[in-house]
Image 1 (cartoon, rainbow, N blue to C red):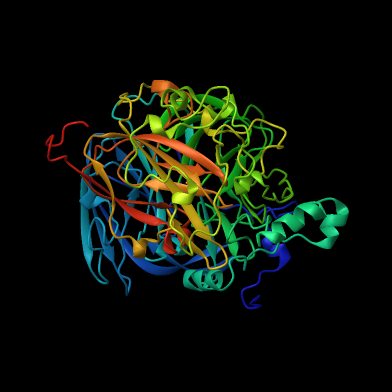
Image 2: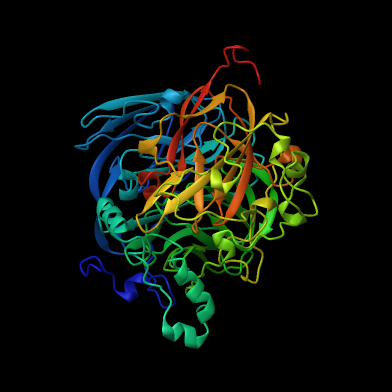
Length: 590
């Protein structure tokens, strides 16, 4: 099943390890408060912006790759807006196929959201469409195509929205750090191989040598996995065997470099714009302070490493106090490769690049079999107040709440379809745990429970309804879905009444993490912070785990709701959320 034409040499796969050449690219998307820019990575701003989508090439580590870009740039240019302005963005499609732009994380009328077939018809080949909307927020966001698999080919870019008044996050310099993945293999070729064999790109399977060396699971454990026809090394569907991992469009050997002056507070706007790759980000020798998540300000959290899921953004502050270079390491969650960049006081400086760490192996807990006792850590005050658990552990009482028509409180309620290969018998809230593979990192690792909003949440009503949605899949047939039903088999959207307050629990019945994104809304993660719960638009649900959020359905219209792993969405893990006024209350709060 291995196609020699698409295989990469091991030295290419591990590019970014120790011994990389000191090639240095001119910094792209690197700006101080004066917003000085690299000419190769233009910044677009103002009330009227034009984006022209076209096919092009992009150079990665000195090699040309086919791509789709905007205004001659792949990845697409940085768009800089200001809170309170009205944006008018005309998109010209020079492709020979339909295209679109979705403004990820922006709150706007649903007709401007940019999802073909849901919020607008799409932009036909040779056509154009003008998006017009008020800018009602500030922070770090991004934009990308929502047509086919164009996002994988380079059709994505960052958005920075400056606040209307003084920025509460003080920094003397900032850099946008856009993380992504790119392949010489066409995205439809990647998807076809995944349909043929779910683990096609996994070159890190367990071996007899690994067993003897103690790197892999004991034989008895491996036999248990074999009996379930599961592979614990299958952490990521698409790996470094075909991907190049990028920082602002540059490969590891390109070594994108962002400058600083010693003692400056430097703001790094981290954006994960990849198609399938979750990154673990760290700067060896330099601590990070997380100050924003998904564009929303959070109380400062000092960490040494964080995991950024596909579609998430994090803003961090670093303060280099030494006149030396630091390596920014964005290691893939399966440890099959890394994106690499440098922070330095001068162009041309480099720092040591750490080798890839041992790849993680899934455990029985990742299969939803490790939560015999949820304990106090898994039961937040909000969960306890709603009757879902007891602070000292114990079973959930779903009878205490009114449940919606799509609520499968028990796994047997799931339909028996080919998209339900496994069911987590004892899923637990894992938002307080380090992400998969980082439990033994030996330093401070960010968890969702570390995040708290700097401001009280705008809606502090108690939810009146609970909804449980299962994330399901079948790796052997590469099928993914919500509640066992793929998008093309859904008969009705997920309904919400306008302004109702709903508690949504996502249950991951698969052995892979899923970054779940809801368009047009922010939600509050239920992680024990009361009315200062962190507000996000994307949440990564750990394998065998659950994630709960409170949602105020305050944006009327039809909205996409999906896993942001591109091939999972393409294979069916997507549905439509519809928000409509309640005829009985004429749109008043439920």
